[in-house]
Length: 626
Image (cartoon, rainbow, N blue to C red; front, side, top):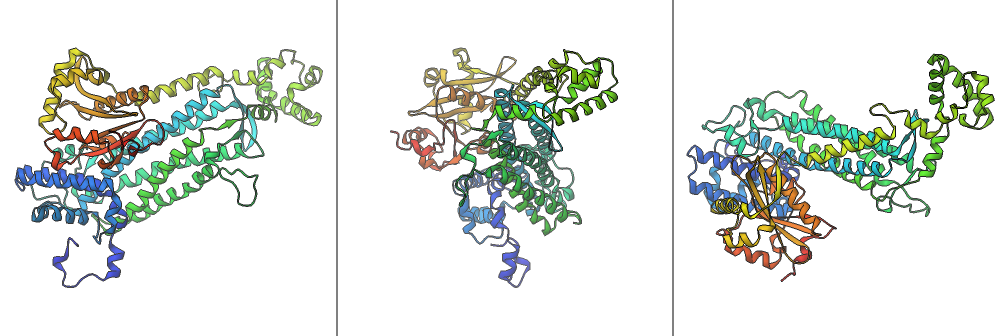
């Protein structure tokens, strides 16, 4: 169904329709379009376009639609709708009749798609931040394990000075840390809401756009309607951040491919990320790393294409902008997949310490140390540099290292050289001398590892205290649970049940005041449910809910629970934490029996999501529990 047919007396040519329609790729914005539509229905209620009853009908129908989409997003592709907006509207009309036709009042597909895309970028950006953190944590772990593993450092692909494998890991960690800050900056700038800008000139209804923005979780509303519907800076910034990060991934992949080669043999990748040859049975190819390196070009291409598309567009919206999505989706998918694959490449990696040490001892990598030794004896560095160069020529002719030359031979190059020179030419000394901040000295590497771990830990520790609940918290917890139950956000729990399960609760607090609570209800066979999770009014979107979730997941892990699930009307919050949607039909029967006390049981609009703590198990593993 087209949303614009009244002006036309002839139907669109099917070839044009196929050329024009975007549903085949923008179906991925379904959840965002539905979330934006719910917020818009509330805005229309606030200005009297919709009654309370009409808005509630629309919200319930939209939530049902969102649940259906999350369980089976591919269903959308079976439609002949022009785009995701027309698909959602038609589905809504099928559910609620002519009431569904009122929802588009005062709204354009222009501000609608701009909002959808920002919501998608925000959600996808959070997932990528988690993957960046995961890769950085993997690098820190490997660095900690190989703190003393000597590795030859290279310039011009020539052996230069010895470093450590830990120092190499930390170099890439710094790159990915910059990628993290770049992505956060991009997400911060896109945190404005275009909804309510209309087609280009704004909406004719007195919508409180700042309230609308806050309802959708944005910091504020956009300031100019023309810019709002034509702005795609956030698309290009996300692609730019992806391109820089893919560059870093590609460089790391190239290093590891070289280290894994038979010519160096420094590392061996696990079988899980390598493949064989169809002809040569001895081959073990680093395909995962080569694909990371190869897919970098796809992300660059997406950024370049988008910038070329936008560079000459007049204000405001133009159909050219439909080209923003396929490239963005592919770039973000590629970035996310490559980050996860890079982290996987470090699992089961073998470092051949003997070969890395042997390589570091070759190539006269201690020549700079000899020059520094001469400087310590009063010889100017430029002269010392020349002396050592002559000594290296002699060592090459004799087929040995500088440290193997007899003292008498070394003294032919400079009479200031004494027996103490040999202590300066060891690998240990070469490393230990680089003790300035950021150097390869063991104490500096240890410091860098500790600081990196602190940064990573801080990201999972918001400025809020989370602790296990005490009996003295009972009154406050009961008040919060009763309040949320009246709003229909959580199931009601009587005081006796709360007393009995107080040990399952955690609370968040700020300066001694409780700000939220949540509980971990344990079923049989390693399954647990997050229950009664909520944050007090005034404390939302300040990290308290995330802190509670991290506490409960950590607790579940300590208890060897395999999987956690949640039933919620705000799935976006949980997907940002790594939860994935699952059909409620796959939940254990005893879970669904608990739902019978819910006042919305026969019109349930909650979404089920799961989080795997250990192993690849799915919720279906527990579907037979009685």
